[in-house]
Image (spheres, rainbow, N blue to C red):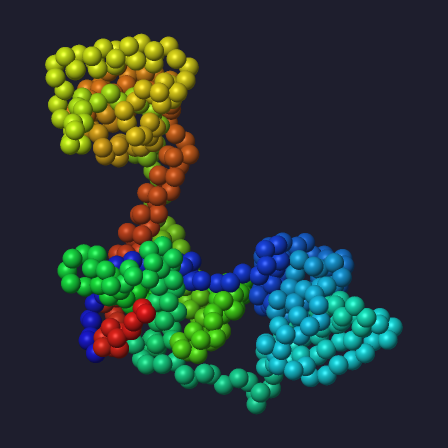
Amino acid sequence: MRTMGKIKILTLALLMMSVLPACRVKEGQYEVTNYIGSSISNFEKKTNIDLLEQSKDVYIAEGKIQVIAPGGDVSSVTLLDEAKEYTIYGVAIGMKKSDAEKLLNDTFGKELNKTIDSANHSITYHYMNKEHELYVSFDIDQEKVTELSFYKAHPSDSEEETQDTARGELMAMIGDSKVYYNEAMVYLKSVQENYEKEYGKDIWEVDIQNDGNSFGDLIKDVVIDQIIELKIIVDKAKELGIELDSDEKADARAFAREHYEGLSDQDIIKYHMTKELLENVYANNILAEKVFETVTINVDNTVPDHEAQQITVQHILIKGTKTNDEGKEVALSQEEKQVKYDKVQSLLSKAKETEDFYALAEANTEADTIEYTFGRGTGPTEYSSAFEQAAFTLKTGEVSNIISTEYGWHIIYCVTDFNEDATTQVKENIIEQRRMDMFANVFSEWSTDYDVVINTEAWKSISFE
């Protein structure tokens, strides 16, 4: 193993949960079990439903859902006749009994008992595990789901699930925090999936930087650094008194469950994945984001318009060169230059009269791009600073004179000398960068308090195959 006394920040691992894959329920449906433990307001927001308080701790949407929420936190949900857009463990009202049983047997195993309700011509199956309890009613004749009731179970101490210790090899120690193989693989497999979707499975052996190291090795270094950063931030949250509220914990459970259900049985076994592990991963990432928000809340958010101002222009380019038979750009003869300059002068006259500069440009320009939006110092990189300087002298609706650059002759039209939307976005980017810089400075101080040990041999031995 190698020891690191101080960590250099490569990237802040604040939003890594955004790259973690998670399967979704059928479009237009909401899996309500994801929000057990969340507040009523969060339940309404996440499931797109309005609830009325029927009595103390009982909330309803007539004909659709009944929710029990002692102290304001959801502990029980019942789906009624009209709740077809909602599911419990993937089971929906109106689903065939055979399909529902398959889903529930995968989660709970065989039902505990069955009860016949002659008055409603239905039969109710009772399922239970160490965390949850479920009652599912089926119409006896049609064999379709008519009602589902889901509860958070309260097992006795002897029934509590023991923690799974099959976490794999110890990969890193960050202060008192330990990172095992299975947790590291949550991040690594997610990164792998995203890169392979974009670049294919052969990307990992490519020597991107021509330094003898594969892209796979580079990414593994980045991932382990991000995990280290995350663990330090999460540990510091305790000192700062920052913790997740009930809604944030519910979100972590929801993300974890969706992620887990998207994994293959092979990956679950191979990488020692559990819902508890994934819930911890998502909770850590949400907490890290919360730390970031708290630490940088007082950043200076004043950005003058002049500093962020973005303009939008369109232009016509007539090149001062030509392409020879070999495909190379070569200088024009004096006669050719005069012909082209005469054309530019003619276009300038038309540009000052037309009400559709873009159409004129589209029909005559020799440039690949007609319209640009940019600020000071960020003009089109393919042209010299003269282009940007000329553009910033124009007011909305004005047309420039002929601008000569090494590329040829330009005629610039100012669509707007203050693009409000683009300027607002740049302001937000500037403020966000200030926050990142502020947090990087704070994190740099934090990191000196932690000894980091990485199991280098084990980490390097991990393959993307």
